[in-house]
Length: 198
Image (cartoon, rainbow, N blue to C red):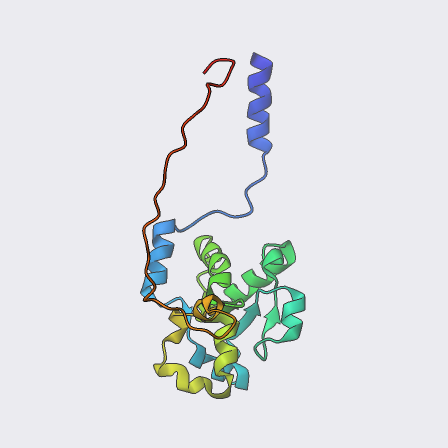
């Protein structure tokens, strides 16, 4: 028994320090979401795209293939799968120490929400979330400055038009005036008891 206790003590003393230590609770992170100071608004992209600021770095967290198909000009690809790789962490820490604001975005805001919240909880106070994500940027890239009075990034974009999908394919309209007769449901009676018990 004493040997077992000694082995446990040695294991705890030599255990490596965790890679991340949470500095904020989930409630504090949710409060930050409601506060709005950790958001990066689409109209603020104008200065970043034009190169008028060097204190903001955009990170596209989508995979390399999707990034190659289109991204916000000036953005770097840092896939969500590799965000916590040691090299990437060192880069993120260096940017934090230099006072650079990091803006994460994905295909939509929801895709970047998890990584943003994680990094905020472990002490990266310089990371912001692009509202609307790439979808909203792409829909408004012709005039991003005009989005200052638009809050459509909160509603997102529908993936499917369910009304169109439910419509009859032959061009006829659905008749709501049809007589809906109640259907009688009768319980089927058992003819015999199953053998073998309950």
